[in-house]
Length: 324
Image 1: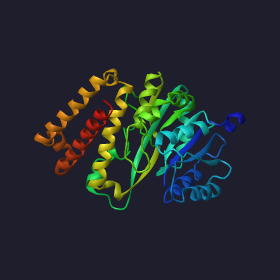
Image 2: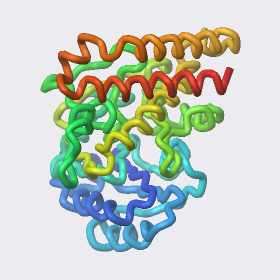
Image 3: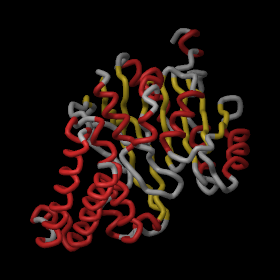
Image 4: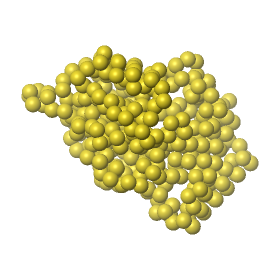
């Protein structure tokens, strides 16, 4: 590899953190243990209005694990999309690799990421595998829905390009061309319409909003299984109570996202009709219970999973009605 290639900054690893004092040190430690030690990547931590000792822990972690390679910035506006916009403004790499504050990259994560950039020089967005790492003993329901609701992802051993407009990586480990992110954030209304998580509020689908805009802007969106992260999930996120709130947040996020790719949802009257259709879907589910497919897939957990799905539908109805 030529000297200029070794010293060329390609990737800014951006960690969006909220009240992460108890976990972000592990993320910085994992970045400090990467097999790639070149100057081709740096680290940006965005402290998104944390109210704990996140700033102090980050400062200590940077000094201990990634000195000279990392910096921390403050984003006072709560909301993951606002944090990602701050990261985009601060990043200097050609690509941004977004990590959540509980994502532990494999030791060769950066090395594999740089390999993908060489193999696919025109890619706009990509992501890989995200495996759950349970902190404590998870509830069976949480384990059952982890690959839908808890940001776990494994789509097999073969790389491929997504074709559907909503098909793409999860936010955990999402790698995006910085110029693409800048283009997306020029749309000032996006962060307002789809804020993502705001502190402890569980509103979802902001990741999908980025995916949709990448497709609409003509970018290649890929799955690359060589990129591996572990997502640390505490048992508190596997309880029925937490998952009910999470599923409603996912539903609300889906309704907020829909106008980005569905012209009908941009019409106030049709948007109300869509919301009513969601209510009818919820009513049907309340009367019939879990589908045969849900019973086959989840067995004894089918009725609990059905209640989560019902709450997701209710979230789409409530959000759709709110913006009608």
